[in-house]
Image (cartoon, rainbow, N blue to C red; front, side):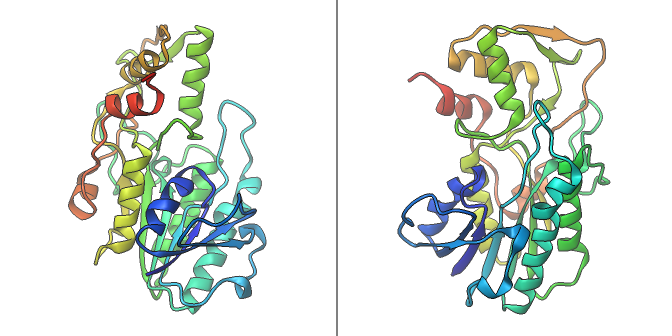
Length: 288
C-alpha cells in the first residue's frame, strides 16, 4: 500500500514513520527533510500552509494526516489565525487533493480536546457535543467537521488522541509536570486528586493508527486513549518516582473535570491499547 504521511517529523509522526515504512511504501510530507530518507520512505518537501497540489505524488492509496500546529498553554499560546493555516486550510487543501487523486482512505490525527472535559467521574464518548476549550482544539474541530460532514469519495477515520506521551514528546502538560518536579514546586489538583485522565503511550497510538489505515471498516471517529484511567496525583507520583523527585501537591476544594476518554468503540474497532501508566512512564523516564 502506498501511504502519504504528513507531520512525519512531529511527535506522533516520527514514531509512526518507521513502523509504517516496515509495512508499506511511505511518502512523508515534511517542511524540511531531517536527513537521508529511511528505507521505504520518500521525503516530499512541502508546506501545508502553501500547498501546491501539483507537487503531490500519484498513486497514493491512504493519507495519514498528522501535521498540525500545537498550542502551549504554559507559554505563548498561538492564536486562532496562526493555527488555522496548517490546521484548517491545510487540511482542507489535502482533502480536496485526495478527492481528485483516487485516495481510498483518509486517516486524520485529531484530538480528544474537541469534546472538552466531562464532569468529575465521567468518561467522554465520541457522541459528546463538541466543546473545544481553546483555539487549537477549535481548529482541530473545524478540520474534523470538514472530514466527517462532507461526502468524500473515500473512507475517513478521525483519531481523537488523548495526551499521547513519550520521553521525546511535546505534550505541554507533561513537560510542565517535569519542570515543577525539577524545581520542587507544588502541582495543583482537585479535591478528587484530579483531573483524571487516560493518556496513551505513543507506541499504542502508533499501532492503533496503523490499524485505522489497514482494517476493512475503520471507525469514522474514535477516541484513542490509554487502557487505564488515573488521577493527576497518581500520574505525577509515577513520573516523580521515575525521575527521582519528590512530588508536592496543592489540593483544591472542588472536584476536577474529567479528561478520561471512553475507549469502548476503540476496543471494538481497532483493538485495546496495551501499555498502562506505570509501565509507560517507567519505560520512558525510568533510570534503568
